[in-house]
Structures are given as C-alpha cells and as structure tokens.
Amino acid sequence: MFHHENHPTPGSSQSDIEMLGGHKYEEEKPTQVGLRERLRHFTWAWYTLTMSGGGLAVLIINQPNSFRGLREIGIAVYIINLIFFALVCSTMATRFILHGNLMESLRHDREGLFFPTFWLSVATIICGLSKYFGSEDNQAFQYALEVLFWIYCVCTLLVAIVQYSFVFSSHRYGLQSMMPSWILPAFPIMLSGTIASVIGEQQPARAALPIIGAGVTFQGLGFSISFMMYAHYIGRLMESGLPHSDHRPGMFICVGPPAFTALALVGMTKGLPEDFSLLHDEFAIQDGRTIELMAIAAGVFLWALSFWFFCIAVIAVIRSPPKAFHLNWWAMVFPNTGFTLATITLGNVLNSPGIQAVSSAMSICIVCMFIFVLINNVRAVIRKDIMYPGKDEDVSE
Image 1 (tube, rainbow, N blue to C red):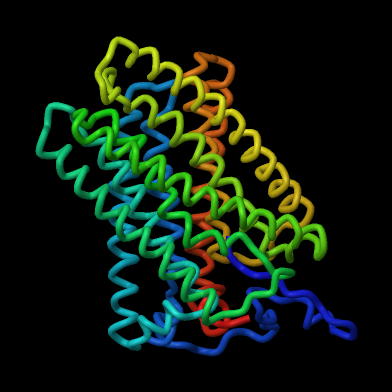
Image 2: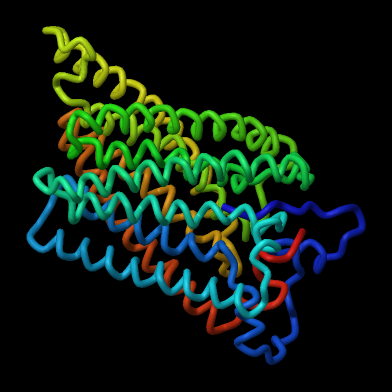
C-alpha cells in the first residue's frame, strides 16, 4: 500500500539501492531494544490488520455457496477481529501515553497517511455488526446502525478534507515516487457507500433513502479522488517503472476503489424500498428496476478496472517477491476482499453459477492469504523486522 519508492542515483552502491521504506537493510544483528522503545514504533499502519480481519468476516457471511457452520465461523472471525482491534487501540494508546507523540504521528509525512486505516477498520466492524447481528424486526438496533452510519460519514468526510488540506500545505511528495498510499485519506469516506449497501436493505424507508443517497454521494467522492490519483500512479509507473520489490504488495490498494464502488452501487439498489419514488406513483417499481440495471452495468465496468489492477499487481509481485515483511503486505488482503465481494455480488445479481463458483475459489484464496500474512506479521514482530527503530512507517524517506 503504502511506501513511496526511492530510485538510486548514479554512483549509488548496492547497499544504497537495497532500501526498505527509505532505510537500508541492517547487515548486523539488531541491538537490544526494550519494549518501551519498541512501542514508540507501533504505528497507525497496524490497523491494516484489523481492517483486513473485518473484511474477511464480512466476506465469509456473504458466501454464495454456504454450508452448515459457516455463520458460526464468520462470527468467530468477527469476534477475534474485535479483540485484535481492541489490542491495537490499547497498544496505540499506550504508545501515546508513554511517548506523547499523537500529534507528531498524525503530522508525519509517512505514518500520517495510515491514520485512515483506523476508520477503514471501523467500517468493516459496522458492516459485520449489521450482517451478523442485524434484524429488521429490531428497531432499536436499526436506529443504532443509522446513528453509527451518520457519525461515520461526518468523521470520515472531515478526515478526507482536513488530512488532504494538511498534506497539500505541509508536505511535498514527488510525483515520480507516487504510491497508492496517497489514496488512503479518501478511502474511508468511500466506504460510506459500502456501509449503506449493507445496512440500507434492513432500514425502514424513512431511513433507507437518506442513507442510500449519502452512500452514493460519498462513494462517488471517494472514487473520484482515487481516480484522479490513478492518473499520477500510471504516469509514475510509465516514467519510473515498478516499485522496489518490498513495496510491490502495496500495488494491490488500487484494486480496492473500483471494486468497493461496484459492490456499493449494486448493493445500494437492493436497499431501495419498492415505493422509493417521492411521488409514490405506479412507476416506482419500474424506476427501481431501471436503476438496478444501470448499477449492474456500472458494476461490471468497474469490476473490469479492478481486475486489471489486480493482474498488474500479481505479475509485479511474482516477478520480484518482497524480501522482508512490512505491514503493506495486508494490502494483499483487504482490497482483494472488496474485489471478491464485488465478484460475489455480480454473480448473485446475474444469477451466474459460474461467477459464484469463481468467487468461492477467490474467497478460499483470501482466507489462505490472510493466514499467510498474519503468520508472517507475528514472525516479523518476534524477529524485530517491524516495531523496531528505523524499520517502520514512522521514519521519513
């Protein structure tokens, strides 16, 4: 996701070229560093773990080919992810209490870009809450989800406005070093549409229409910002080539915006009440079907773009696999979860058993990738490859 690329200058040595996150690989064994100092390097990027876990829980409950016990597995994954989220929040709070660097982390030119992953984690938690525990008959629960949705919209809109305003005025990033992490501040507001697509169908007409209207609005805002960033990203690839091998997992972040937009557009049409027309006339049902067909067509269009970015990232990673673990490996899970969910949604609305079978196979791959990255994440902490001075996102390029 998440690192900017550095390019060697003429005369650079091999050790200068072998950079990881802007820092040279350490040839000597790490010196002894205490837990307190290691906590200083527990960054906002750790929320990539919980946003991936939450996305996996939502993916499990949306499987087109279900089996007995699948829901219970999904609930277990959801609860485990809540525990992870609580642990990450507690550890972040401990870091800021011990070192007092909250504002410094938010203003940092690299670490600050990961702050939105906290809100992405919240989005997956809200979606999972609705999927696993929501009920149309429980009015109090649906009202709580409605309130959570609007609070999320306000907070993430402020993130998109305030963080980009700060970045534009306080930092300078070279276009030749553009990486998809620049999209992150717009990602949480974009997932407002995804949340609306999940909770809208259970909401009463009074709440469903405003929620879906806001979902379309903010989904469009987030995707539009992402699409503008894509122009810089493609130009950077054309001019400067692929990123360093350790940065290439971050290329999967580009899979997310079109996939989540396809998922949201189709899903929100399902949430429209049959009498959604403001005039409640006899054409309301026909109008709803027309909107649904337009959403499906747009969803297929966007799915193809997501598929293209996915193939480019896969080829890049296979050609030069990363040599050391970084939290950007979680980009191989969360955006691809959205891609798989979009495939499932299109397979359902098109009533295609073939697409549904492909999406089931994709889901198995996502589960395997999640386990693989989680194991490597734990190993990296033990081996001091992350949460260690000079090896995390809290050091400038």
